[in-house]
Structures are given as structure tokens and as C-alpha cells.
Amino acid sequence: MVLADLGRKITSALRSLSNATVINEEVLNAMLKEICAALLESDVNIRLVKQLRENVKSVIDFDDMAGGLNKRRMIQSAVFKELIKLVDPGVKPYQPVKGRPNVIMFVGLQGSGKTTTCTKLAYHYMKKGWKSCLVCADTFRAGAYDQLKQNATKARIPFYGSYTEVDPVVIAQEGVDMFKAENFEFIVVDTSGRHKQEDSLFEEMLQVSNAVKPDNIIFVMDASIGQACEAQARAFKEKVDVGSVIITKLDGHAKGGGALSAVAATQSPVIFIGTGEHIDDLEPFKTKPFISKLLGLGDIEGLIDKVNELKLDDNEELIEKIKHGQFTLRDMYEQFTNIMKMGPFSQIMGMIPGFSQDFMTKGGEQESMARLKKLMTIMDSMNDSELDNQDGAKLFSKQPTRMARVARGSGVTEREVKELISQYTKFAAVVKKMGGIKGLFKGGDMTKNVNPTQMAKLNQQMARMMDPSVLQRMGGMGGLQNMMRQLQQGAGGLGNLMGMGGGGGK
Image (cartoon, rainbow, N blue to C red; front, side, top):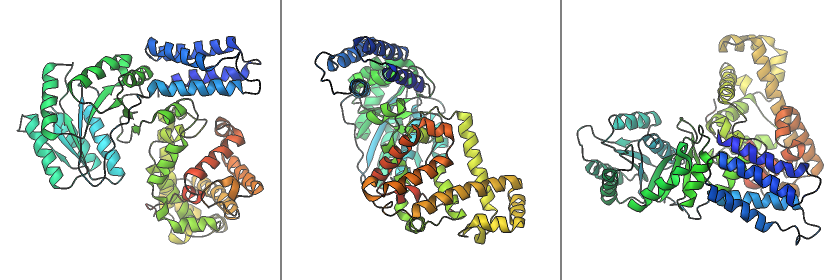
């Protein structure tokens, strides 16, 4: 993600505070100069950058500051708050209501990724259990209906459109009426785009809007135009009642920071950001977690949401087994299945403190997914007695012929099967250690429930399983402990977090 370059530069500037022996006006000015330069490079409007600098300086007064205050922390906190203000319009976006039809109308210029984003949004809500559908009212662009039809079919989303009707108002009205009659909850209407802001485009948008009476009009905008987004967003807001914005192509352009801050300046809330071409590459946009991830501070709230989406409460049996320190190869298969369900690895890595979304390159991400699939293929060649054995590793070491049979069945070498068994042994050792810790699976604060000595041993065991460079990026043992504590508080008990086996196993 190109926006990560901005995050790295700001983080580097903030880190200079830690290297300074004395924190004074000179150090503050040097740090702000670096941050402002990074923001300007990302095409953030000079007026907004100047405002951020002035606001930070107004909060930090070295003459009036009490002696016992942590100056570094105060400055870092002030910068963090101002960065949030930069992308926060201060307006709450429309929240769809489950159980009734929510008509969402998409508008925007041609080439912004509007049609693809329609499918992504409908898919996002479908994954959350909403009855979603798509209506193609774009009759201007040749192939628009074919594109939406192809995307919707691939995502298994019901859709409506016409090859013969040329009036977009008629298509929109018919599609919305049909899906309302069928009790759909999330109805997405795609409208025509143009190459520029033409009066005919605005007139058509108004007619479609008057016909379907949308609950929310979403303006889709291309991040590559940077701060020019502000003029575009204002022009659309003046003509139609734009309720929220989705910014696309944030993964490939250096002007993403400018685009986000420009839209915020128009008081239009950004609700999602497009971070790639795949159907899962659409992230809910929340200002504080976004800035937190940008600076490598993680997004624990987002990670917990991802975990909760897997409905871990449904798998009480696995949680009960983990409580007793039991972990089979089948359990590991289910863990892998749910890791695949959580979405792109780079997104998940960006939610962990100490990492950024570019920690894993596209090639590295594909390689990791391929490796995970290969491990699951190996387990596909195991029989029930091997998958459900309480000590699968011992079973394979006692009977080496099993290893050879599984290798042949899955088309891999015996060495690769051994590597899988070795990985399983490490997982099982951690689970066994967890099973012996009282209070670990209760909700609330882990520090109150768990014996600190036992918890320290568990953290050490987990640290030994991790790549040293990964542990370092998390902030060492202290960072790992802090993350575990936050996850425990947010996920309603570590059993939910570790019991990621909500179906989909073998």
C-alpha cells in the first residue's frame, strides 16, 4: 500500500523524539517539519498541513509544562489527534437498518471503479448475513451491465438489469421494486458515470434518485487525483444529496493522503476504502483505527471484528478441548480454514501492532496462502484416526509408513509432511500450556484472572514459535503481552480467540 510510505515517514519523525536527549522547541520544530513534508508529498492540501502544525504547537507549550509530564508522550498524542482530525469530517454516515429495505445509490465519474465497488459493498453486507442484491441502471457505458452481471454471478449476489431498456430511471425503478417485494435488505443501485462532470450526468442522477428515493447516496472517488477530490466531492454534493464516500485505488497511488483529507474537508464521511482488485479488498474506514494502522500501531478493534465474524461461539466443543489442553490435527485444519476466511493476510498483518499493511508483499502474501493450502491438502490425505488422535505427532513417529502414505496421497515429499507435524507439535504445546492456566478463558481483564507467572510462561512459549524479526516488529515480549491483553479484553475471553473453528473443517 503506497499510503504506507506516508505512515513510515511520520513514524520515523515521531521516533526522532525517542532519540533526542532533551525535548525542546528545536526538536519539536524539526519533527513537525518532517511530518509536514511527508503530508505535502502525499498531496495533502497546504492549508490543512499548516493547520495541523499550528494546532500541535498550540497544545505544546514548553514554558507552562509541568516538570513531571512526559513531553514525548504529549507530543505524540497531539500529533495522533491532529492526524485523526485531518481525515475526520465530523459527520456520522448513514447506518443501514437490518430487517427492512435499504436502497443505496452509487454515483461517480467513469473509471473510478464504481461498478466493481458496488459488488464489493453488496458482498461485504452479504457476508455479514444481510440479504443483498444489485441493480444496474448504467445504460450509458457499453458493457456496464455485462460487467456487473459477471461480478454478481461470481459473488453469488442476485442482480437486475436489461439489455433492451435504455431508460436508466425505468430500470432502477423496476429493479428496486422487485427486490423490495422479495424482502431484500441491502439494494445497491449502480448509475451511469461520465468522463467529466456534465450537466446531463447530474440531471440523470437526480431523476434516478427521485424515482428510487435512496436511503444513502454513495459517491465513489478515485484516490489518484489527490486533493482534487475536494472540488469533485463539493460539485456532486451541490447537485445530489451525497451521504457518504468510498475512495478507491488507495493501494496504488501516492496521493491517497491528499484524497482522504480533501474529502474530509467537504464534511463527507468516507465509509470504505478500496485497497485492491479482489472482492475482499474493501475496508471499512474508521478514522482512529486507520491512523493507528498507518503508524504501525495496529487495529485491535478491527482484528477482533474479523475474529467475531467467524462466529466462534458456535464451536463450544473446540473451546472446551482447548481448556483441557487438547488439540488435534483436525482442530489445526479448522484453524487454517478460518484464517483463510479472515481475508487477505496483508490486511490482518496491518491490524497487529508493530506491523504495516506492506509488511507482506503481494508475492509473499500469495506464497503464504499457497503454503497454507498445501498444508491443508496434506491433512486432506489423513484418515479420521490420524486427524482425531490426541497425540497425532506420536502416532506418525511410531508408524513412519503413515507419513509415506500421506505424502503419496497429497503429492508432496515426506519431509513436507514432517514439517507439518512439527508445526502441529508447536501448536499443541501452546494449547497444552493454556489448558493448565486457570482463568485464561474468562472474559474481562486477563491480568485479574490469570496468575502472572503462568501467563509469562505462555507468552514465552508463543514467542519461541514466532520468527524473531516478527516478534521484534511487535515490540518484543512487551508488545506481545500487550496485544494478548487487548485481545483478551475485546474478544470476551481467549477461548473465543483461540477457538477459531467455526465450521468449515473436514
